[in-house]
Image (cartoon, rainbow over the protein chains, first blue to last red):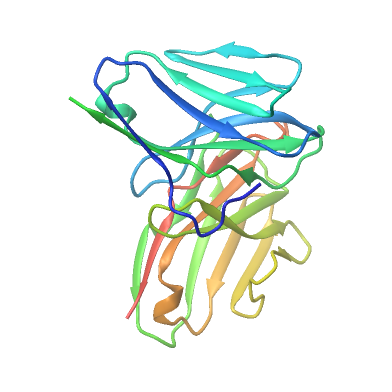
Length: 113
Length: 116
């Protein structure tokens, strides 16, 4: 569920390394998941999504992994670049109906050149 | 992806005045838009769900008389912060969903509100 009022965890990596950002969810009815990227002073941007009938989906330099058994979602970024520095949020929704977002806590990713 | 325009991007106002923030879906229709508030280094907090042609649904703890929401058309929702006070200073973000791409929300760039 939402982590209101908590400060976000941080992850620091070197440029070129792979990054893994994790997210846990609690609602077993969640069947649709999205990762968003939020750069400083901007609104969140869609990165990649996955439905519960899949356990892995790849995009350009990003891979999302879903483990429904332990209710865990992860975002892997290959060859991380300084431009990847941002806050990453996971979002999960239950069912197929259109509804409000439930954001995960978010992780601040800092990429050092 | 779809484009959501939010205006203004930054506003400074005096305490006691009201500020209106606009959220527009530029290339799609959105029956539902959402308004969030975000403090530095924290996650987005949903304030309210804005439904076209009907009253907004506010989250617990959000004052509906303080944060007025109007969703007059399928492409425009407005948030008015009434009688703003310094504690209302924050980053406000709207989002809208494409009816053809359910559950994917597209976000505006956000509005930085500073109340003096």
